[in-house]
Amino acid sequence: MLRPALRRRRVALAIAAALAPIAAATAVLVLPGAASAAVPAPPSGWTTVFSDDFNGAAGTGLNTANWLYDLGTSYPGGAANWGTGEVESETNSTANVYQDGAGHLVIKPIQSGGSWTSGRVETQRTDFAAPAGGEMEITASIEQPNPAAGVGYWPAFWALGAAARPVGATNWPSIGELDVMEDVNALSEVSHTLHCGVDPGGPCNETTGIGSGLLACSGCQTGYHTYSVIVDRRTAGAEQLRFYTDGALQLTVNQSQMDATTWANAVDHGFFIILNVAIGGAYPNAICGCTSPNSATSSGAGMSVDYVAVYQTSGSTSSPSASPSASPSSTGGSGGGTSCTTTATSNISADCYNAAQGAVTVSAASGDTNPSGVDGNQVPQLTNGEYLEYNNVNFGSTGSTQFDARVASGAAGGVSGLVNVVLDNPANAPIGNFAVGNTGGWSSWRTIPANIAKTTGTHNVYLEFQSGAGGNPPFVSLHYFNFPTS
Image 1 (cartoon, helix red, strand yellow):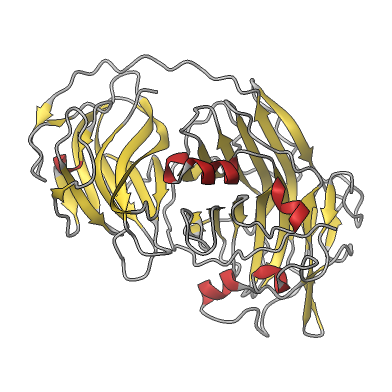
Image 2 (tube, rainbow, N blue to C red; image 1 turned 120 degrees about the vertical axis):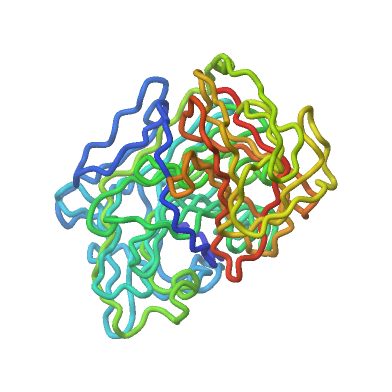
């Protein structure tokens, strides 16, 4: 029985943004549904490559043609307690892992005599992959555990790179880990994370990873909600991972955030899916500031899974739409910008902001070149809670679903955050975002793209900077940005 041994320790970012749904006509991103819903059919251009809706008889185990059970407290030769400090022992008992007869898989941690048992299962298949030029979506409908006292609970829906299985994941994190859903301590929250590269440090800031931090997930312990990741390889050199809850985009990770080899090793290959409920460990301990579980932690609160599915495209791509018809205009910026376009598709210099919140300054963008229409200034070392306001940005009638920003970061190890795009009022929900950590230094510039909800017309644009790192350290500098044609 193959059982990866990981060092998936988390120091989560406490980011509590409620992000807006993103239009995704070509993906199976469904809203929360009733219990025992059918597996959604693939849309045009996609195929279903795997699904299980757990329609076995009550009290039965899983179909072992599809699933394998992980057993005990470590992979043979692997780290104790699965490398995370969790305390449960995994079993294949139907007390811990069973189908309920109503179309669900239940994974239930049980405490007896001071010891915990639980379940962790993996797909037999390890070939769930986005083809070059195409996309792959991994999704599940899950009701999180709802214990009366949940300190130490750690439910998860995630995937590991196929190369982890033959060696017990001793090659983690280089082979890639996609955390589609995690919650800890029964907080009714969700976090999404990519792990990659080397541990510690590296381009994914291990052992933290590039993540969303814990986000509010109202009703996620009392109803079924969908959690999804899309691996998007449609554009060579500009691939993406996008993580969703109930169809709302909550984290985008871009290929440009790391070197090509690290990205390929982490993303461009097959994965296998894992479902488990751990008890205790570094992630719940970090969030509660305690050692979990404790004597009050409730036994027997199960994670219920309605279905798991994997969808894939053939690798075909669509043609881009026509450019917006807006004409450029030029204004001065409150940050000192002297030639500030308001055309969304053009490069907008960071210092062209009309207003700002926080202790915002402007300085020379050392180490970077200046494309046409961009001056040589940056807004450096932005921190949590700050924003920049750009008035009357014209997206035209065709509109845009993309946001590109030229950024640099010399953030300390483990520090990262989100750059959110908000329209018309800084209190509105973001229409898209990307996560950014250390890029190699404050003069190491990268262009990072992100999806946004399709936007047309003229709007005030707010770029809001959000991080849960203690002490609000700086995490990103901005040189310029634009909104390419849809």
